[in-house]
Figure 1 (cartoon, rainbow, N blue to C red):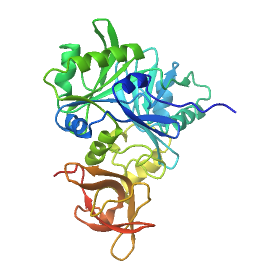
Figure 2 (figure 1 turned 180 degrees about the horizontal axis):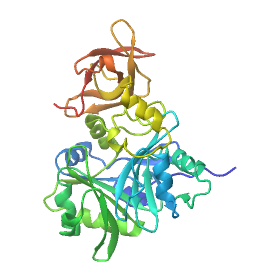
Figure 3 (figure 1 turned 120 degrees about the vertical axis):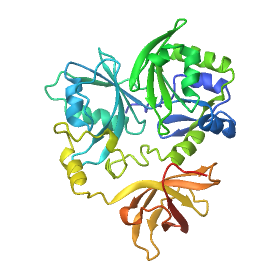
Figure 4 (figure 1 turned 135 degrees about the vertical axis):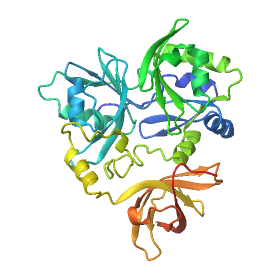
Length: 366
């Protein structure tokens, strides 16, 4: 029997010295907090926040047929991805249900795919299932890199402090290799849900640690903070960002998850294409991801189903959190389309009884 591999950031010891607290979910260790939730939330909303996402899944693909294979088994058009391109795509089952959302990064000699930590093994096995005569080798390289995400309205200005004017030369959905006085890393430039710039950094662990130290010691006038999952979860739910396994799993399809922006309806066939196309053509999706406001504090460990006043099925709750902006418990859930209008009153039903819930469009506002 093989020993279970615990996945965590290669910089965990460094974070421990900074006072971080951690929590473990199955075989994954994540950063809970760096001690002051209010400071972390402020950096997300008003400044620039740095989140370590190294424990997420990382798959390396090599071989001449890698892009062609991925194009045949995922929703987005990736066949013509060129070096330094970054693109999201969805892996779905034959029934059009979500396996995972992945970020594909083309390094020229090979590809790196960033997946959720929870579904990385499913994605790897799914890819390997369809490698028959293709010149493709897919392997798990999770944990070999320090992977950092910079989020917040000050992210663009802050990373320019670190990297210089080269940041302005990087187009969105592209990456560039950066040499900051001997500290080498790859910098991706992306857009967040608020249409602000955000950045993902991939580096060797030693370079990642030096880069972190530089950022901490040279944050200057910026509202900069390292953040843990407690702060990010509140931010994620407020903005309606789906995650695995809560909202992204094989119970739901890209229509329901509102992810059609990374589905290409004009490319050729792919696994699950017929189902997704039929749902689009005939508008057959029956429920959609949306926000929820709770009148009482729900128990996060319980399963909540949604019902209308007559007890009819109205959907289910997938994520629960607390909103500092709304000063109220909020959540995400898949709500049947006849109840999706903002302001609709529903009940969240668990083994402990009912809680009144209001349907609310994301992002949440005060």
